[in-house]
Image (tube, rainbow, N blue to C red):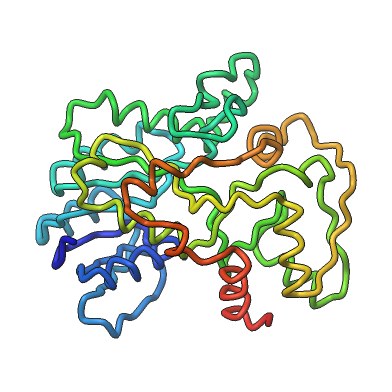
Length: 308
């Protein structure tokens, strides 16, 4: 284990970044976080810098400190906006982790491996989807830039599944804290019947943060892409059962007519997201025993909200 490394988490004030920081600190590293949140640290190895991670902000920060590793959580809607940021980061660290998404994958391979076709490769006839510069497409374009760019190729791409946390309790198209609100109000939530038996692209944020932390500083991970998942591969119906057991909230599985431009359904939640996580487990050395079950992870987040 490499100890005493200095790591920068850009946009790392959210749940995924917080869990990544927690694991990095446990491993003996020092962590700085750039975020918009008002955060205060009581750990001498953890420091927060409040601010928007603009090129100017990062230039100033990196002029004072060199980081052994950087994890960039910021989403760039247009990959061109990321190019100057990437040039700066890749020239000021030994290992850069770029946050992509599991949403890049098309519905062509089950279970999904890192070599599975991406939406950008197979969606050729949906001009409206392509024109929207959707989240999945911008991530794929940024990935292609990384492979083709002339800068040091000291990066690793990570494609996390949905990170379940107290900030976003996802179940199919329902998100944020709607399940908690429904439980408090004693009302049932309607969920699309079409998704009931689909595998959810979902994991507890603590598992995802741990996996990302363990990819850092491994030479064999340079230039590689990894789907970030502990491989529990629950169906959406099983996720619903967890919320019913923990919160008492009820769900109605009903047929739903999604509008033609509901890309979040047709190109994400309406697809089976069973993941083969063998590549990332091999790279990190982690096993099933190192992860928290979805039920226990959701319980942790619900306790943070005071819901249970």
